[in-house]
Length: 283
Image 1 (cartoon, rainbow, N blue to C red):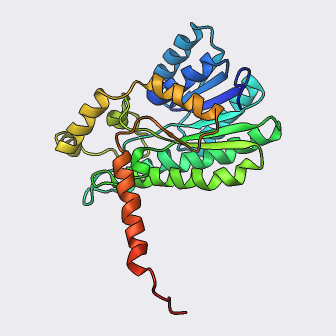
Image 2 (image 1 turned 45 degrees about the vertical axis):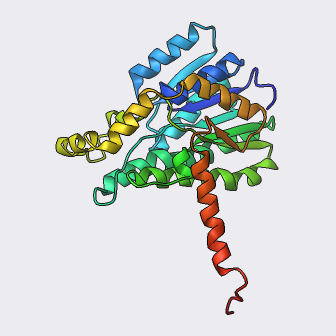
Image 3 (image 1 turned 180 degrees about the vertical axis):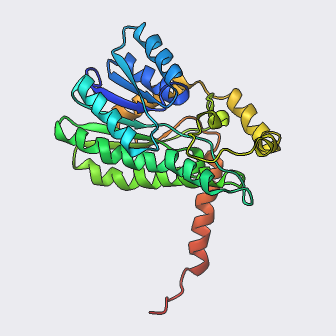
């Protein structure tokens, strides 16, 4: 995938934030891009803006947590472009909360968008990439929270850990089929993730206004909101993803802010092995 010009990409969560940054960076490299998002108006606006740069782009609306809509989006992409070379599983929500506030709907929505949709995207688009035998690449957006879990947003962290595990496991499996696999683990990026509830489908129970108000007034939410509002430009993330595809990076990071936390986690894991080193397990 060194030469991306003329290839075709399918990008979810592409109407804004990281997804739009990736779509823009790929389009600049001559990639034909099908943008997919649940927000129809924002999607139309994003597609129109990219078309003004002479990019070959189009859009398809889909709720990626529904397999039927992902299938329909794949059909629309093939109908429009004939082939798919690059899959970017980027759509994500900042759902969930700390222990004691969990709900079935909260778990179902967070896992449905952040993890299950990634699995289904690969199930649907993987064979489409394989069949043309021209090679391809899959990028799935996890998070630094997919490598270092802290309290406060456990369902989100669980979903992102799953994306990391999925990507690591698939990398070896798909290499022999000519498909590269990367996992994107961004830090604080300037997106709308703190307002994810705006896209909550009606089939999921909406949190009460009192519950939303309590969440938004919490110190953790205010901290995240502030960091995100001053976060990294999504277009820069898009450029990193494009480079990651071209060079087949296993992990794509956006900055080194959280590297010490990851090193501390690895040290704690190593310490766990050191505690039992030299013992003979009973068989």
